[in-house]
Amino acid sequence: MEEIVQLFQGIIAFRWQYLVMYMIGGFLIYLAIKKDYEPMLLLPIGFGAILVNLPLKSIWEYEPTLDSTVTSIVSKYPELQNFFVERLHYIFTDGQAFRVEPGVLQLFFNSGILTEIFPVLIFVAVGAMIDFTPLLKNPRMLLFGAAAQFGIFFTLLTALFLGFDLKVAASIGIIGAADGPTSIFVASKFAKEWLGPISVAAYSYMSLVPIIQPPVIRMLTTKKERMIKMEYKEVKVSKTVRILFPIVITIIAGVIAPISVPLVGLLMFGNLIREAGVLERLSKAAQNELANLVTLLLGITIGATMHYEKFLRWETLLILGMGLVAFIFDTAGGVIFAKIMNLFVKEKINPMVGAAGISAFPMSARVIQKMAKQEDPHNFILMQAVSANVAGQLGSIVAGGMVLALVPWLLSL
Figure 1: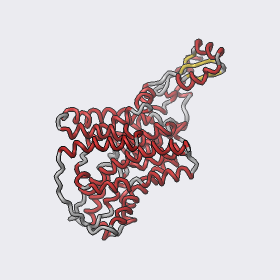
Figure 2: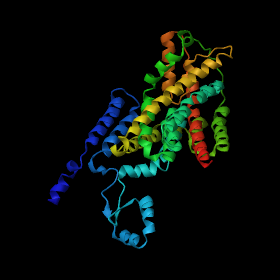
Figure 3: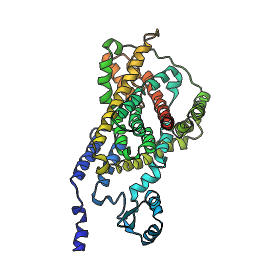
Figure 4: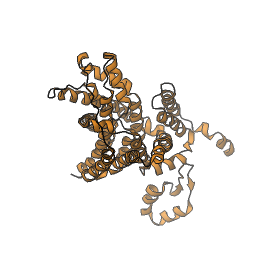
């Protein structure tokens, strides 16, 4: 009888919630393949969600095994039980100790996410991909990179109002950074239990930028404003400036907000590799092999955090909803800031450029140029939008660093 039970234990352990998670995972895979929405991330996340919701979830952890030695130790020294539970992943049932061995995806999670290795390696790769030259040619676009982070702090306050504690609220708000690695980094610090929904929301909405941004922009601008043409002046940026930029930004960030160094420092290190000109092989490796491998492992590991017991909760819907709110208000913040600037400057700014201040690079810049061309086929504002979009990359990381620094300080008051 026991052999029969073991043979069909997967069927016996099956739950209807698994079917729901298969549909969610399948939907993410559909968006990746059919719609081409962030396929490098949504596909592994979707498949990871399916893997971890197979009965007995052996890919996450193996079946607990009895440990007589630990049982004997804890029977003599009960105060040690918490140590074995929290540090060594033991569970205790009827006074007996069982060792829970982590499966392959939990090993990836423990060694890659909890240690923050995967997110910071992604920053190295992103830094090697980004060309800050358009921003250096037009430094005032930095203002849009800051203004378009408004949604983060609005959503943080909304999450607090809805009953989330400050750390979780901050992790939800950072979805508005439109920067997946930053969202993962902050959530791994403040809200490990909500890492799955927060990561899925961040990457899903990043992929939906072409759908989310246009209606918000049209709602806040007139046709005349969307037709504003912006003169682009070619400015030569020397190699010395391009090399000094990542070094100076790292030093400034490290002095003002030391906790942001893993985010800013590794991004700038990747960019320095790119701009140095003598490390072409390393630059290409960071942009290709490193980015592809870490993205693959990061995606499937994030998907493996989406077990139905943690994911199918009403709080998950709230997180997904507030993530959308964060994206909407980030877009709105950039547009409104541009409209305010137009009250004080002679050379008018197309308000749509402000919307490109989010970190979804280069998708947002492309969306802005497409909308400008729809209004006027001869209007070309791509370079300004790219400048704002690159500023958004920096803005999202600075915002993440601010959140990491401010939340512990506020909790200590």
